[in-house]
Image (tube, rainbow, N blue to C red; front, side):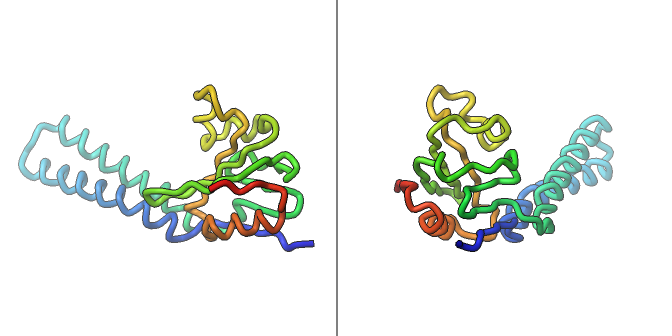
Length: 169
């Protein structure tokens, strides 16, 4: 019996993406203060101040995940469970293949299932594209770039736990 692989949020995978909204929010905030100091129209200053608050709020929303130490994804001998997308166990016998895609700082595992995924997974935000496009109805997308294990390590764990699952390049 293999030990389960429990994945949590990566602190750097959450902190670094939040830096952009913080910087933009600070720039909007500085612009709003300059507008107030120069006597600009209150309506314009209010819009800029609201943009600053929205960007700073987005930054805090993204960064808060760095302090969440709960288990997000579990890979074990029974299957995989993504608590961020439905928290439903998908047994390995329902997985036909898996593919690691990455680019521009993000990584995603795409699981091809033998049948349509459960509704809890199908309607998760990560799988919304599968609902719109006419192909890929049995594909489950799992974002892995914000987790504390690299995608290649997850592929190795899948090969160990479910040797029948085809890993496509």
